Length: 215
Image (cartoon, rainbow, N blue to C red; front, side):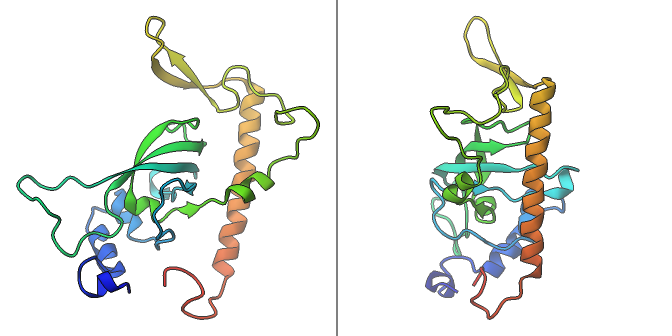
């Protein structure tokens, strides 16, 4: 327990879980109350894979974001200061989506607001480790071994623009068969690695109370 939690200035982990658990079953906050905190540092500019909320979908989508700008919670009218104990992992983050196989959250700079409690329960992605797993490219070819889709550049989504303003009007799924097949292969490989990580984590036996977070 931190010093600020011990003196009642900030919620303890138990108080935070209890507060999140008061949300209706099926809600994001209630789901987050069942997960441990895995990122307790200031997450600005980290690569974070958001926790998957399985009850809402039959497919395990993966979304990786970079938190860019923190936004405080709005206090009720007439309240000038947050009451004690102050919330752990409060507020939200404006994030850039850097990887996603979710149709509603395309990668490539798409912005979303993510609650601080969700970021804190995500998985920190090691960029060096992620790049090391990519196929090696040699010589002067700056691209991946397989050609990029000419319609969506292998993002899986085609962006539509307004003819008069050039503003984005929406997105549609790419119907290129080869592109779709590559996306399915990438998703299957990612899920295979994720399943192996989950299995390894489930089989892990902690040596002592300081072996694994949260401490």
